[in-house]
Length: 419
Ligand code: EPU
Image (cartoon, rainbow, N blue to C red; front, top):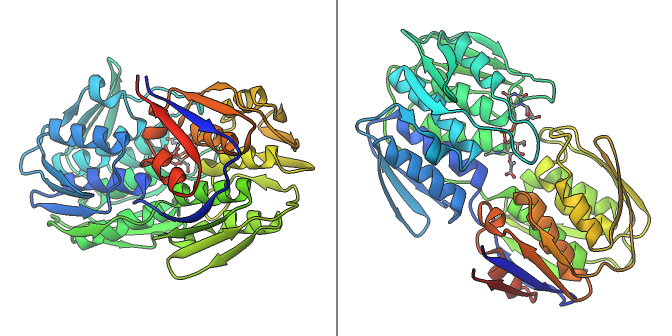
């Protein structure tokens, strides 16, 4: 297994180009199954999660070609079953359920298990499909869906922890080919949901309200091929902003949509960092004495759960007491014990982390447990004394395109050791 060695203490300055959004690209690639005609998706990041999704689409019968960030998918004929061997690698595989149900009126996909960030149920996805007239069964570890016909309906997708992003995507993808009108209440409003709706509308769907809590979908008999460019990855962008903050450097992000990063920009400004917002650019300048902050993760436009671990790394080295409450995935704190091994002073009280900033952390061998946790460990290592050895970096390769190269371009010293 590859590992990453982060040599701490090298200042960061310069420009970094943000890649296309993983969490937009995954459902958009799956949505290409909704038509027999070719779809061309650009700005697709080169990540292992994207590779898994393309493997699943190929398995389902789609013809997939990929070159320099552009993916062409033609799904003339489809199989409706995605087996465990390929689905188990990535929870987002569930987003083929909606397109298969929409187009073929049936789907069998291996049920995703939980993961280190907590229990990952799909009850709300199933609630939405059932509202449209599908029957669902769990059998031999698979979720099976079938429907004689799909009819528009009103469904509320609010769960205990708020709206569901992939659940909203999935129901939207099934409803575009249902008869009549579907209304999704308490829909997720994340930019990735809007990006998917924009792509579906280019394919001939009739979706209004994406980006609000109420999405209205007028079913159409069929969709056609379309071209689409995936939006920039707001979480990758946020991670590099936090890298700039940790090192007190002057870091400019290119090809970013600053409107998607409002909550993070507010939090960093509150802590004292100067952030300049341009058209498609963001620039952070360090602050000699940042102040602690209190944050609660919330559905968009609130502070994103996918930036919580990276903020823990920053606030661990920010003098004073910061507090982060995690409301989306209350158990998503696997990075805390690893940050503590590097000298962080963090205590957990239920779903809240109380972080006492320390002067200096020290490099140590640490274990990446999930994607954002691994990013947090790399960020902490940038400033820590000595060398931080991040093991199990396959987690980071799931969601960050060339993170070592991008940080090295900014002045970091990161080595990747091949297994
Ligand atoms: N939930 C349910 N029932 C469901 C679905 C979700 O109770 O049927 C709960 C979840 O357990 C969680 C909350 O609802 O407590 C929100 O989960 P959501 O469904 O929104 O998460 P997701 O759609 O599975 C996406 C991202 C995650 C991101 C979350 C929240 C993708 C591929 N994944 O997951 O991204 O954390 O939304 O914003 O889009 C990451 O990129 O590192 C990542 C984990």
